[in-house]
Length: 245
Image 1 (cartoon, one colour):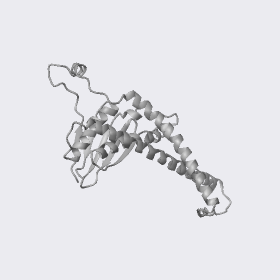
Image 2: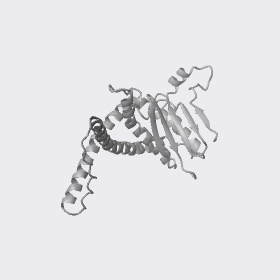
Image 3: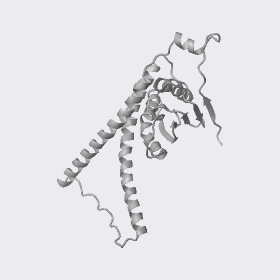
Image 4: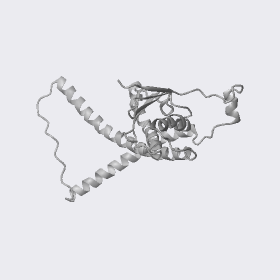
């Protein structure tokens, strides 16, 4: 089994042991590039805006495709497979309703995937610009672990006012960043229950995943970032870096 290295975010400390950390922060406050409250409101409105925009774009593309089919520029779509005709019992009726509901949820998943992709693309743009601003006076990172630690400390603090709670790696290009109280989903809830809240949270971590990807991309690392939400408000990001980075 591959060995794993853990990184725990250290507590803020003053360079002078005689000066408390809170007083040192007041004397030399950190530079804030992003207002965290504004960032939270921005993500909330951005998700709603992108969802509406994606629905309009999907409807427009379907309308254009239909016009091209009617004009003979595209072939007719393949017909749907025939449904076997039989008299449904009560059990069969329930099953058929469930299958129809599953097909509908599948189409909704496709729409949500389009929204996630657009949010991640926006996050890549934001993350790359933030990393460029924070790295302007730094030298290049010699190791991928140094770049990931920069994301865990500087990028996280800039965007979400804290460092990553835990960083794990298998030393083979896979890093797991864990935030036990991730701000974009810390106040998320749903009247339909916890499972529905977790499902909705997956949309709100798409842009942060793009920020991580964009920051690493600006530092010269092509990464695949996969967010995972299993228990609110905890969120983990699996970062995969190809060999040779």
